[in-house]
Image (cartoon, rainbow, N blue to C red):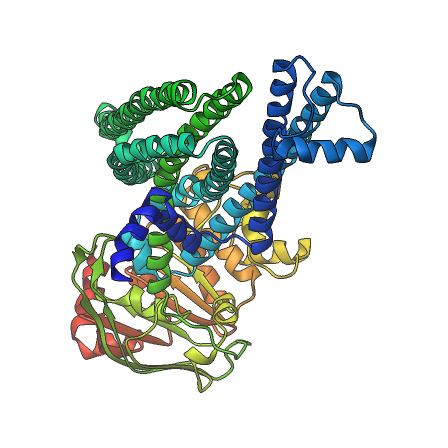
Length: 619
């Protein structure tokens, strides 16, 4: 068994069986789809075989001038004779030509349906892989997105997932070509065993010679896929920072960066083409040599008839073409494996990063209190796909304990990097605490259904999260039921965002990319209106006024003041004027709550908060 393992492995590598196994492990393809593709491939091979086999009787008939009989003319003549007797057909040249043409016609009909069905299956597989990868990525924790740029993920989701459908077609194409090669070999065996062995020996020599070349093509494909991902990441990132590029007059520099990536991909493409050309240069002469040697043996050694030699030459020409096609298929599988492995790596990393598991309890709003008990959070070590550490783990929150009564207004203040944003990200389970417990009305946060918990919490960040869509589409995004016009107007009024009705197209006005057509204050008020339209019982506002002018800040403050007592509000603020009326202020420093109380209590205490307040007052 050990003696056979190495030859079997070599055969598996030659046929790309090992690559196909890896591919089928990655690609989601159903048994019915494989069965359909295989069935078409088998039918195509059968009709091809029948059509070619019928050439021998035609050549023999022509060679003998039509005077020969079926006796002693081989099993093909005997089978054809029985078939013609059943149908009552005479043994004439037109009849023989017609019988030979029929399977060729049927072969082309099968080819048409095979091509159509292949396109259907390919598109299905590509979409399934894209959606499965997208779903996995969307479930990933925030750290995952910190390691992968948007551009890289877009490249994987759009470009590389397209390889899935193509890969399966290559596999089935390889199977189809393999069946035809086996069929041609069977026909050659029926004609002459020695000639078949000569042909097989040449085919094995050709495959052995191009094995290393195909391996290099695979390596270049993997490198090309990685460069493509990097380039896509750079392009998307730079397009998002186009103002900075213009302000720094860095257009030429950025263009050169992309040119360098493009040049690397161009060079790899040239190398792959050269390798493909090397395969062509190697295989064609050897395959033609096999034809000439076969003819020599057939004429000089075996004394074959002209009809047999004609069929041998015809079958060899078809076989040689299929050997080339088979080797091209091996190249394509090697190329597609690179993209599929990239998709698999991304999906597996995203899945590993998703440590947040949903619970069974639906979140129905906060009625009594939100409590954190001895909560800590540590960022884990971050690694890239190659296992290289990107950043070391970091302790962010330490032993946080607090209670937030329903309907209260709680403010988190402190210097940047103290852990405030991380703390509020724990409340909708964008992250999970490393230790400690978080409860809503006494129910552990891990027991809630994640989707209902997150939808039950209104979340407004420093930069309003807006799509390049209409005002209306942004307002109703994520709502389970379509709101009425009165509900939309009420939310806009409470957010002081009724200015949208004065726009040329009102609620149907497009915001532009990230709301670029509006000021920061206007975008923030639209974002607040969306939060209010959802009518969540808990509102989290992460520095909602830090980037706003005084007028826009005043609007947000008035909105918060009116919501005070009706919603449970948690606000992060650098500007203390925004949170001066909070029921409790928590000063966070180095991941701990160092001071807590009302504004008056903390000022009277005369510690860090009082100094912070005086600094802002003087400013």
